[in-house]
Length: 156
Ligand code: ATP
Ligand code: MG
Image 1 (spheres, rainbow, N blue to C red):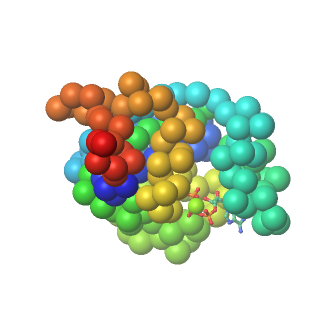
Image 2: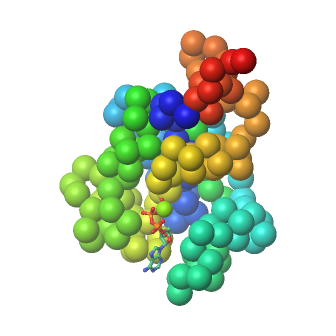
């Protein structure tokens, strides 16, 4: 894929604390375009599937319980080098280690309840985008985002 798209979530802690709007403002201020966005609550099966890569980690159960504890926002962000750009703006997993000016420094309360999620590679971004959205729900100011722009393949 071209690397211009990533998937972010506003996690249940930040939605509960009323920080979702401020987080989206920060995202836009840093030059990302929000090309898809929805509010939803994950089922247990969905949260387990989304975080299956962490299945063997000691915090997996806690993570799944937290992620289904309330509504979240999922969004697709567009910017050149979206994955690393968004991870930089998010800040480190643990807010105690996150740099000033990052979302987690501003809005996270702990390593577990850390306000936001971001894809960690272009391949995972692709999977995570289509976990939440169908291609006709992904629309830029300039018009519909072509599937090939997201998956990074040339039309045959
Ligand atoms: P995310 O994938 O949510 O964007 P990340 O990539 O910074 O965060 P990961 O290592 O992928 O961090 O961990 C996924 C999530 O699991 C973290 O965001 C956090 O909510 C939770 N988590 C990670 N490590 C711990 C831990 N030691 N204790 C409790 N929760 C943890
Ligand atoms: Mg991660």
